[in-house]
Amino acid sequence: MTTVAALQALRAMTVLEEISSGAVTRDVLDRLGVRDARLWERLAVTYFGPTRYRRLQAAAREAAVPLSLDAVAVIEKHLRSLLRGASVTVEELRVELCGLRGTVGEIDREAAARVREHNRTVKDAAAKAYGKRALRGGKNTDALGMRTLTLTLPERQISHIIATLLPAADQARAADPRLGYEPAMADAAYQHLTTGAAGGEVPPVVPLVVMGLPDYAAVLRQEGDETVFALTDGTTITGKELVEHEMASHGLVGVYDPVDGGVNLYRDQRCASFKQRMLLAAETILCPTPGCTTPADQCQVHHLTPWKHGGETNLVNLSMACRVHNARNDDDPNTPPRHGRLAREPGGVVHHPPDGGPPRTNTHPIRTLSAMGLVNR
Ligand SMILES: [Zn+2]
Image 1 (cartoon, rainbow, N blue to C red):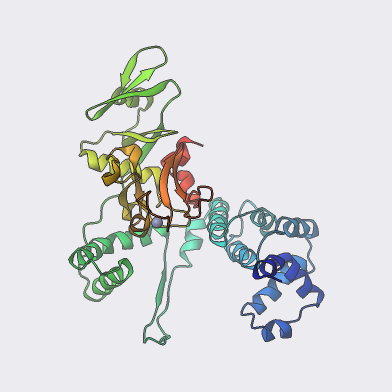
Image 2: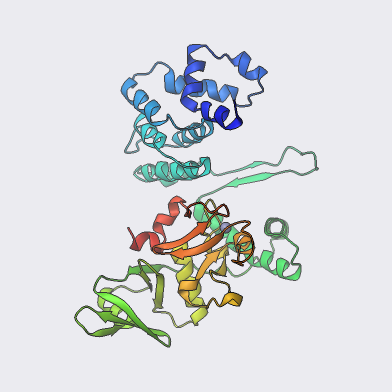
């Protein structure tokens, strides 16, 4: 049997059924060195054991047929976070989550997002979640003499901490280009926590209204800092007029073409490069590389066609990309592909893998709230 065939045969439902029937015992699993033997036993009870919800259990098993044990384990991990009083029961949500497909990482994030959606319907969800805040670890020393702390807080508090530490980390990295992001952040955190030293100025959260180009307007031309649109009645209108026509409320307004991406940013007097950064960040929310979770605020502006190959610094040729994926991008089309490259296709930025396979997008659930996710909904 080849390794691929062996892994293919090791589908969760096949293994769990045999554990449940007693054909595979805990002793056998322990002897084979299966670290998760105890977890598999618990999963076997969930998916094949006695239950009052037999119809839903059978539906979950059927939906989970293609899933690996790791995928089923992450689904169960998130199901445990479903709050009492949510709009769905654990048994019902299990069927839905077992229908997820993709890599374990993709299923992990999508399952977390779906459970969160249901938890939002619970009245005191935020208070219940806040009860789970924690600072854990710090007691065990590893083989290198290091210890690890894990901090769990609401997302906005964590992103506030990151934003507070980032300026000091960036400064240290500018002084020493060999210093990595994680060590620099560790230094900044240690300094901040032990001396109470000020981080940097935390930039305020800027709300951005995302507006898709209405059907009746098409981009006609760019005139300096202003965009002129052609209307289907044969007249033209500037972006400023369009925004005033479509939107009454205040705040920054980003106009996006559902196919080509960012068009222009309104109600802000800052420079063109700030506008580009803002539009690009809202367009993608995260680095567009599949599986990457680096937020756009911590990304660099990336030229899709490199400047030295004639690529221009205009929105259609730009995207945010994290430091790692920006550096790894196969910029030169004349050298053999190594890590693949980012490219803009109608509807957004995709990643072309180095093996010439079909392009992939970053399917992280938060990207449904990106500008391109919103205008193409
Ligand atoms: Zn990335």
